[in-house]
Image (cartoon, rainbow, N blue to C red; front, side):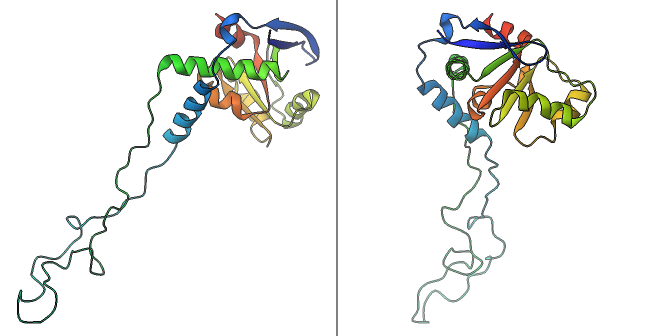
Length: 201
């Protein structure tokens, strides 16, 4: 069974929480599909070219149909000419990939379970830095001694946000922003007890 490491107020190991069965035996492909969909939705879709119907000019036939001994030209907007329209260029492509709600939940549960199996999912009653000082926030991160860390809180407060925002290997989100990609992308997770209770429920 996968277990979450419970920390006390000094961010020292103080117990464990066993994950329920709904987090077990989930196919990893659900996480793969969710991550693929999530990253696709971040694509900007700004690449755009004009086809021959959109470029300006080309009203008059460039030369007579017959008599020149060369090819027949109907419009200067043809892709054959400099300044003409583009053929099969990028234009309003939709990168979104559909994923079901149940698969999103399964992907999140799988990611949580995977972190718990590695012993990198830590639970604490509250993550708050009243002083708003970055050095106090760094002290919390250093106590857990992990490469990087995602911190999930129930609700932001301004002082905690100011304390953590400039730490390179740390990122703080609220419960509403939690998703499978965020869980899987970080080496370790520090999560408030209230958030864990809602996820298990």
